[in-house]
Length: 597
Image (cartoon, rainbow, N blue to C red; front, side, top):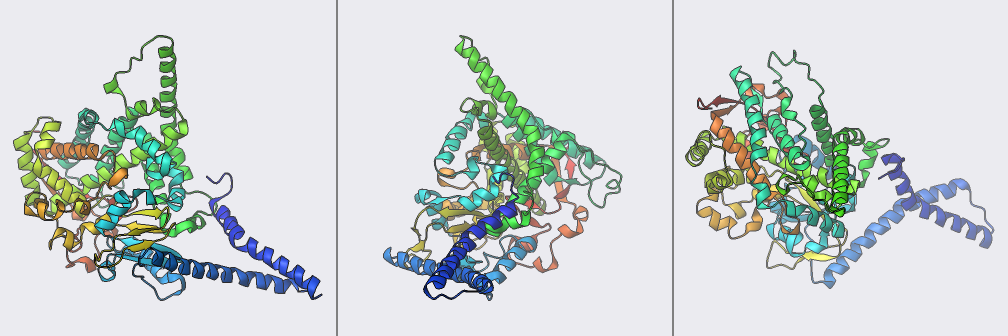
């Protein structure tokens, strides 16, 4: 991406070229004209001062001209601009610092989303003179993701920020390249593929055995850590046919467990791989919030370089082996032989190499699918167990359904999952309350308009090249979409009259897997994986509870949250987000084993 030039230096030189080079050129021309026409020699100091002053003047002129142009183009379309949130400082630096601080220290969605109801559920803000729209309106999201899909893309800023990890994979590409990746990947997620539960069963069995060992000895378990390992092992086997085997490593002990200081963690391949992948994701998730200037925080070195080196040490040999086998098979076929690879035994990588054997394409695509298949599923399973710990009646009712439909020991099947209405309701309600990808962004490819939340008002103009940030999470909390109890966890809303009153009337109010052409191709795969694990979990354990004493002190809700409306006032943990949601400090639980397992 940068060649050998450090990111920060590349950024600064680029800015100098944009802002100072034209000013210097003008200064030289003016000096030459004055020397010739007026026979007056200007001092170098005066030239330098004039040049420096011309930079902010030119920048301000650009801003003013752009603002005038936007108003003029909006009027020509009979549209209006959205309400604007202005801070107290130049460039709205106060808003920017407040947003970043509340993202790190506040509750989910606090900051940019605080004034939605007051401003009409869409507004614009200029952060350091970069205009961004924010919205939680379902009709606007429908326009962005489906109706006016060609007018919105991930955008250059997002792609550049994510490039060192996601490359040009399906989740970080636009236009024809995105279509190629989508066409390449989607056919693999057929019903036959997503309903093969043998992979889930092996890794679920390993995860549950690990937890049982700890519980029998009286220790708490970080369920989030176990779910991260379960989904990582399942995803690597599904993708590559080679499991990273993270569940074979020792589980962590809580900070207050006497064994915590006595255990020296072995840096296994699985541990290094999982840690590196998580660190790379953490780094890239912070970049878009600083716009183009993220490079200044990684001035001399790309902070994803080292973790991605570790990730690639695991992935690259697998890719090379798959390419070699494919080319050998192609040669055998051309010479009259048969490709003996059983279709059912093919991994996603086997499927991909039949379409392309370009190592860079295969690398980027597998990384994209790995991250998408691992984190969102792990987050949903983690928060589902957390919510059942807070609501024991939900746990007992779901367990009763599991025992009635599947039984205490039988392996779940696709037909079992399909019959379990309450299981689906619990998963959907978890996805609503704790949407795994809470925030997202698009950039306009052309001037266009958006539906106005006020249907009696003109449409809203959004200029070409403008970022619009939308929050599915905050949309899920809207009372006008979900009813007066929208802020509370209640799986029955997916089974009673509220389902038809709210969701059925407007399906776009629920969007954990996105929508439109870019809807997650692995949606049903994820539902099946989550359903399978929850069934196995509830077959094996008759009760579960949070071990709040094991929660690290810095990972406990601040006193100010207590008494707040909705889930915030009920929290026993601190939910956070990077690309996807997670529990800060882990989710420490204890469970009682069913005697039949």
